[in-house]
Length: 159
Length: 198
Image (cartoon, rainbow over all chains, first blue to last red):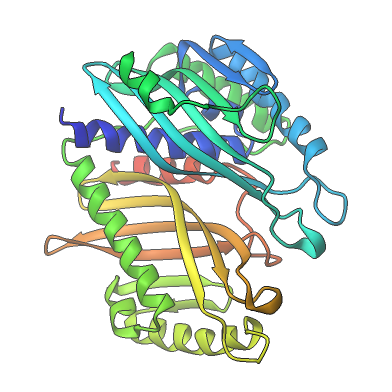
């Protein structure tokens, strides 16, 4: 497989991950991880696909509390991923990607931009399919969850 | 079928009974052919060309991104065929200038942005689910303002070596009755792709 093929498949995985997250599809979300995958995010560390599935099921209620539209209902939350540095070595891969999020929770139903951060990922190809073995979500707007100050790509390249 | 997928399908079936939107029973995990990267790259290029065409009012290029018998569904209705698509988008473009304007009343400079895409390719057919957002200079004192976001639900067809849009549904989370979801749009895409193989 060429770098381009692996990268295309990993980009597709990242898109599927975000659609699953934003549309509260906990099963599709959990399926983006390996059986023993790990999710390290603001609410803690979930180990294993079942723990991640449970986390994803709770995600809707948690973000619904956090983000409201101007009518007081849970806002529509959309995550976006932009540039990604992806390194591939055989059946393992590493990603450092920039993300940001938007909601319809601004004044009078306008767009609000709550935060941005980075993904620090490790991936593995299992039965021909790329999956996350570890995803760490850093958020520059949450104390203790910021990335840096050093270029995160350097740490990735060392691994 | 791997155990994990079988379990997901079972969990989805259980969720269905509780009324929560879920994965269609025949949806499977995606498979990627050897030419996936090339197809995906060309489809991404097509989607970029579509946006430059719309943002610069280049209607020849715009209709050129569609197959001759393609369908476009957006807030103004559904159009079939390039002539109908051209008529619909030209009239929409004039109206949007009345809503999105600078402080002196001129049509705003509007830019659409595509973010992540889940793309599924099966031979000469493909499907996409893509997040978009638009921004313009219609904020206070003509500053930049992000207006709305939504998704594209697309079907693509490859004819004479080129990918074209066969069907594009433009959904907008800020327009009543044009919102996506509540189910994961990628599941519909996978079900369509699987059905096409039968």
